[in-house]
Image (tube, rainbow, N blue to C red; front, side):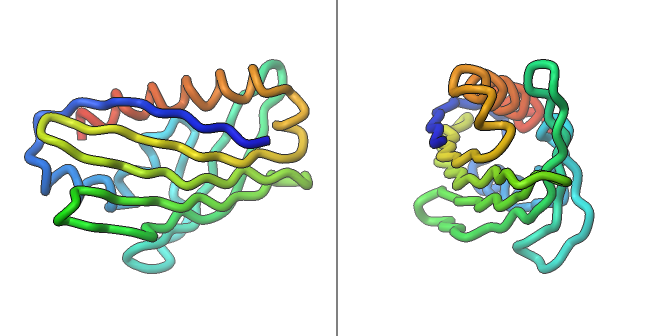
Length: 143
């Protein structure tokens, strides 16, 4: 199942500080509800996990988050998320594009979900992802 979402966010930080914050994975990953860094594998990559509640079901996904593009001139960063359901066969992978502007920016998420999470249906998956990203944008603005 593929899901694409767009979310605006606001911040009072200067645009260059925002780019540095977004690409500081040890700071930004815990801003996702249920997310945590389990190991810093390189300056641009971390091992991470997220615990997600989908309807009556709770799932844990483990994997990596990596900065795959950081363009200071274009004020753009792209993070790649690759994860596998712990104890299951499902995956939750995403490309997350941050386009920064004065006072904030936008987040475009292109996610691919398989396994138990996908079996919950597109409406549930989209609702959960939308809520996670909306919550994330609020926390991001306070970093």
